[in-house]
Amino acid sequence: MMVRKIRHSQSRPFDGLIKTPIKNNPGDMKWILLGTGNPFSGYSREKPANLLLAGEKKILIDCGSGVVRRLLMAGIFPSQISHLFFTHHHADHNSGFIDFFCTSGFSREVPKRKEPLHIYGPTNTRQVIGKMQESLEMDLKDRKTFDEDSNKIIYHESMDGLVFNKDNLEINVFTVDHGDFNPSVGFRFSFKNTIIVFSGDTAPCDNIIKYSKNAELLIHESYNAKWIEHTGSIYGKSASKVFKDAKNKHTSTLEAAEIAETSNAKHLVLTHHIPSIAPIFSLERDYISGMSKIYSGKITMGRDLMMFYK
Image (cartoon, rainbow, N blue to C red; front, side, top):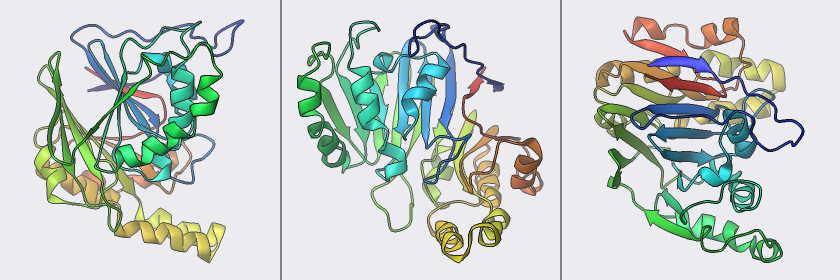
C-alpha cells in the first residue's frame, strides 16, 4: 500500500471546523494513524488511536487522548464516527473517549451522527466505558445541542470471531497476549479483497500470526530493546524499569519482523513505539535496525497522520 503524510489546512476564521474534509471513494480503503505514541505520549505523537475508511464507513480504533485534535487534522468531524473499536482498556487507549463523545455529540454547526454510537471491544468494555458515559450525564443534559437519539451507545462485546459484516466490510476480533492485562484483542479488517490487521497491544502470540496471513497491511505495536536501554541513562532507574517491564507484554521490533515474515504480510507498519522517539528519520532508521534481515517485505515506522491506501 502507498503511504503519505496528511497535510491539514487550518480552518479560518472558525477554529474547530474543517477546511478540507477527507474524501473516500466507495471502493477505497484507507488507514490513518492518529496516535502512534505510548502511555507517556510526547510532543509529536499522541496516544494510541487509528481511523479506518472503508467506502462510506468511518471507524475509530482505540481512542487515546488527543484523538479529537487528530481527527480534525485528518479532515474528519468526530460526529462522523458511528463505530468505535477498543483493543483493551489501558488508559492510553481509552482516555480520549470523554472528549470524543462530548465533541461528537454536538449537532448544530457540524454534521449530526446519523445512527447510535456502536462500541465494540473485549468483555469489560461496557463496564469501563459505561462509567465514563455516566460521568457525563450532568454535562450533556445542560447542552441543548446534544441529541440523545443519535448519541445512544450500543455495546458489542466479543473476544473471538466475526463481529461486523456489512457493506463489503468484515471485521474479526481475536484474543492477544498482553501479559497479565486481560482481556485484550486485535482486529482483522477485510474490505473488497484488501486485508488490514491491527495487533493491539500484545506480546508475540499464535493468533496474531494466524489472523495476519497474507495481509496487505499489518499494523503492529513494538518496542526497541536498544532504545529502552537508553532510557536509564537519560531519565534514571525508575523510568528505565517502567520501560523494561514493557518487554513482558509487548513485541520487540525484531519479533514483529518475524511475525510479519511468518504470516506473509506484505507491509509491516510499526506503532505504539516504546520508547516514543521523535519522528526524525535517523532515529527511526535506528529504531528499525535489523528488521530487514528477518522480514522481506516493506517496513514503515509509523507517524501521526500517516495514511496508507492503494
